Length: 470
Image (cartoon, rainbow, N blue to C red; front, side):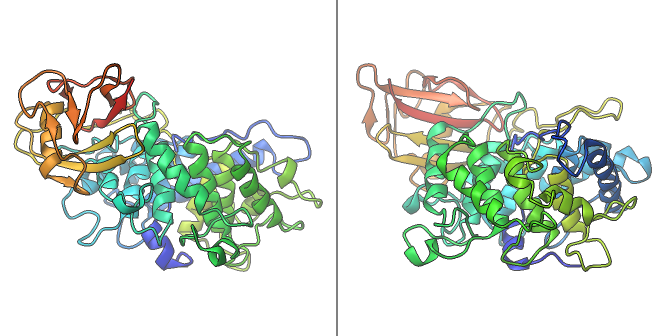
């Protein structure tokens, strides 16, 4: 069965680290026991493995089964261990990395959610999304869709799902060491937009609502509410925050007492339930107890498991269906396994296979991109993807800033740097000069901010943040 609402899901393409919450300690009143969840997880993984093509691929045209990677990771299965007939040369991680490294991926007319999809799935597969290959930096690809005129949005603001999944991708796909790679100023700008689009009923839809009373008072969507609340939580917002609590209450209000299903705008279905549960998981809210255990003793997890074929492992889209849906199976397994919209990759079982793969250095003469933010300390945050062709295996901060002045998307990220060449301390950016203790500082991949020097070494895939201040 095709996935529901293809136009939205195709551009959204679903989806931080949203570490999988292991649902192993549950109250006695929960109707799905840890053993039942473990069985569902085992059978669900087996079904998703059956979706792999003979060449080892999952990704294809349209809305692809590559979303299985987020479910595999949540369920504790390393994507590199998924290989057709045990042929490790065709393992799913290597095949996917090769695909997203090509210039033709994702399409001739990409949208921001294509790259956000890539970030989330690459991360779950154990591919550093900023270092996919010598030419592919998925984090920089996402940065290119920053909306300068509407700071905080990624992609056209009319489709707020692009901003929701920017938060999930940029906040969820952490560094290999588990740190946040993007600066707080960027996270804050995105969170401000997420909050502004929350409807009066506590939820969200994929369409922009900010500043539109009619839209803000319209009914929300279970699916996007799960994704948006996860986006807030992966951005560091507490699950006791008023907006997260409102989202939780919205989902609670959609529960069907007899089954534990969420009554979504699109009817009762497994995919909507999966997205709602993944939102709860991402926020550390147990979907098996408290507000989500109905008066009939049912939970949203019960509904998901009730729609799984066992031992075959696939999940139906609707209870009335007679065959499993690959996309619903991915959504459901991720949720049942305790995952949000991506998870850090598990340690592989394949001998010699590393947890992470990443391009080690620039390839001289090969064009690439770097992600850059420039924060002037006065609320004027600039975000861009910088195109450059390195001449060595590393480059310098000065060379990146010079490239940003002429080859940044969106443009205007850097209009001028002092000094314009050579080495030494960066004393001014975009006309704003150092002043006493307030100076330009730099952070790379979330490191502590330190004095910005033109000669500072920049490596492939580094996420660079410039900030003016004490």
